[in-house]
Length: 148
Ligand code: DQA
Image (cartoon, rainbow, N blue to C red; front, side, top):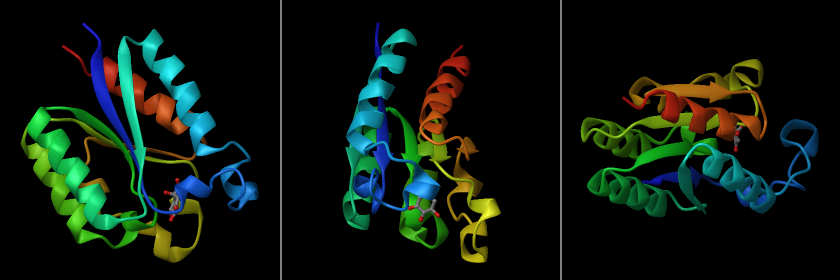
């Protein structure tokens, strides 16, 4: 049976392709998610990929995943660094038994100091950062390799 995974991307990630390409590359989020669907299919997964600039919407999606028992791959983007609401929703999700893989395209630890703090990492199942679009793919592989 194909397992569905929610792949959530936070603020400003819809601008990938033109947003700071020297950091994030020139691939759009749509193309990235299209490629991810192919990788997912090879892994026996299907992905429901969503992006929002809205903290409340993101929290709602995390609750939805918790209630549906879905695993989540999350790039919290700037919310990573300060959103206790997103962190608490992630803690709830993991507490309900889902896995949560935090991903970043860049390596925030190698960037500005304010990016060195993730309020999400402490409640995530694991974190993958610094591999561009491959970070999302590695997250799916991590989820599959965690399967019993
Ligand atoms: C990011 C890193 C964050 O610091 C930044 O705010 C983003 C993208 C990444 O994928 O590298 O928007 O999460």
